[in-house]
Length: 103
Picture 1 (spheres, helix red, strand yellow):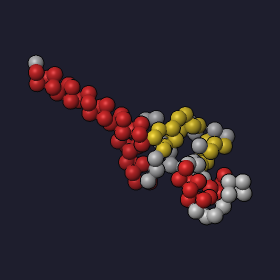
Picture 2 (tube, one colour):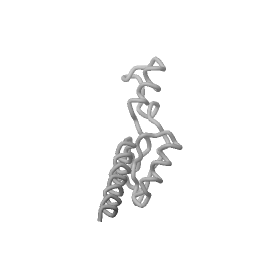
Picture 3 (cartoon, one colour):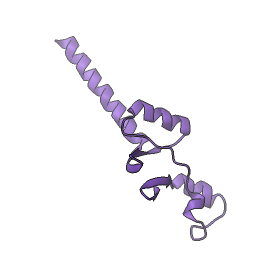
Picture 4 (cartoon, one colour):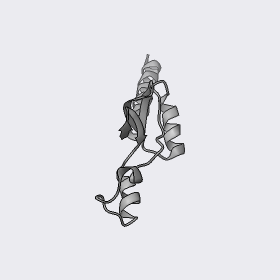
């Protein structure tokens, strides 16, 4: 995360490094972070659901969502975090259904 005054202004990932530095024949020493990072930043809010965040990530083709509360960065969720949450929820539902059927 690239943050200014507590607010995300960009994200710099391995993908950004490859696309904006290596593939353009630049070097790390000569390239400013502002010229290589992804910006503007797509964000989420704590009151958004996992499904909403996954939809945003899919639509915008991003793998990480900074979480903003009161205009301040409070966390970051990755696609892996969201997939894990979905799997855990599905496992819980399966266990509840099996328990209901067996009782």
